Image (cartoon, rainbow, N blue to C red):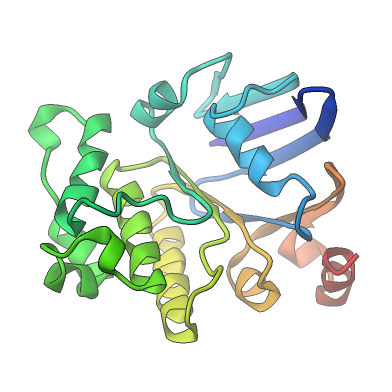
Length: 231
């Protein structure tokens, strides 16, 4: 579903990513790991069209991605759960979910029951403003909003950041379910090692904008991964 090859990215004169390659397959979770400031979020921005890459290629669903705008990628089935959630604080939970309709034909403008099956708390809070939700509830809302768009590729940027343990467990269960259904590819940026290791099928470890370790989970030892992430 996603093939990134030799991707480079600059902010002004500063090079943030240098020759990054990454694959994500349907029915799998690809986890991007590394300490703060190594370029993980920048990588997702480059893939989603939010920040133009300086070089390299990106293929999405078998098609080469040029300088496509983020909304064009979203309409083709790429969804993002951004770091910090970025929900609309003055809109209700229902209205936040309905913003996902922008990627869909009018005939599909409806919030599926499945969304509330995955995140029951949102059903009881549909009339509450997004800004009044707890951090964990906002994270669930951000994931639900992305799923409304019926993605083929789901990019998730540190979904456990600042979230209480019981919500982290629920989010992990949802990711595992989505993977098992085999309808989308998932790229997960995450620093919480235990959470990431339990979900990922393949890994890419970033250090200073370079992939220092990559491979399928069964090709890499847990200790080697832990050591690489801790650098």
